[in-house]
Image (cartoon, rainbow, N blue to C red; front, side, top):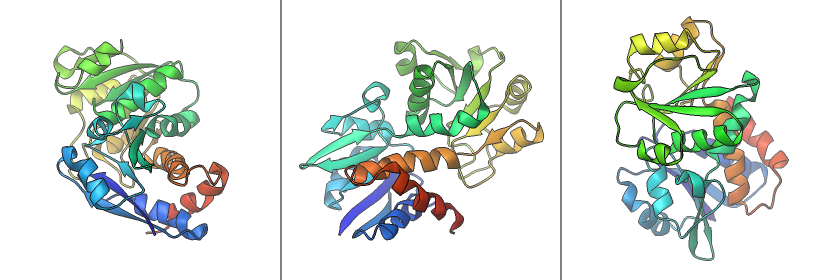
Length: 264
């Protein structure tokens, strides 16, 4: 049996096992996907091999740690320097990032966008900022602290902390922070958020499966919005395609994975 898992902290909320196991069952594959709660990202590689995994997904806050522990990184993950999908290939750990393409598919319903404000500066923010720029949408980063902004500055992406940020209109506001995942926090001060929402055309939270405080405020303004479900599905289909070494087309993987969203 081939074994797969998702690494994260927290990880108990993850729908990934249901999604991938639904595909394995539909295709009658001898494979199983589980959750692995990992507090120390530096241990990811060792745990991957100790569990004899064939592949894995990586969620917050370990995407940058996963990048650092790969034997080889391919595709857009090399630019992003953050990995959300791992595949074992000839004994080597190969890293990919399916967040970027998954996100671009998810925001198609918002129509033409010129710019976007990303809240947060972790691995997901890296993926989305690069994907947006490649899609001719100008990204701006807003983070609580200076700590993780160096990457974005080196990439020539405008980045600010709360204290030096002046609100201006953005076509889309994107929450990539974990605020609201396991608490009732907003990703930034409410007064600043409300000012931003008054000047935007839509919003998306990469957290899925619940109405976060961020989305609650967006909903109250009657703006178009999404949670992270569409992005989750799109990146999951791409990841499963990698897990199965491209043996099945995306069009075969997507229906059973999409159907899993109606399961509890």
